[in-house]
Image (cartoon, rainbow over all chains, first blue to last red; front, side):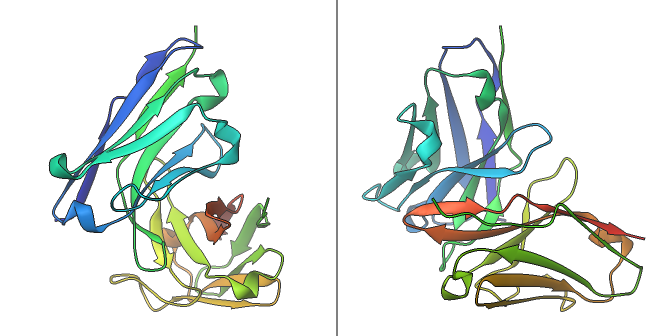
Length: 118
Length: 106
């Protein structure tokens, strides 16, 4: 069964850092591009970042202004999101999602909640 | 930056047809994907590349895309179709989501 499981969320103070992980199983992780998508409470979906299979191509939402870094370890079947200088507006459920042929997001994890608050 | 515009809400009578629009500049030249999200759950892809259904998605879900508007059509609407629906495209190496439409089945 294809599965994505996020972890690493929690409560963090403004200005703090957090590293999210996404463990992939049931498929050949190294063959797929991956994404992070977030959803603030009561709000819509917001794309965060994309990495190609070998990390050659990496893209971010303009709104992040360099605070987040996506990475992957194909040997460990894992995707990561390093989040720095966190703000209250970064509070959201963070999903990892697998890209398919036309970059549609077919497979999603269950999400991990990040709360930025003092 | 590219923007996608969706109606906040759409209502449909049980068994009737619902249409959810997604507006964007020359969106007909892009591939549009549609996601369904129920409360407390992760999104589910229901239509990809404008009009294709992933495995397991009922034929009642269909899509079209032309000019400045893409449309998700849900035929014979069921109570279980009540959810938020999001359109999505890629533009200049950025994934863009519409604001989402809440579908209510009456």
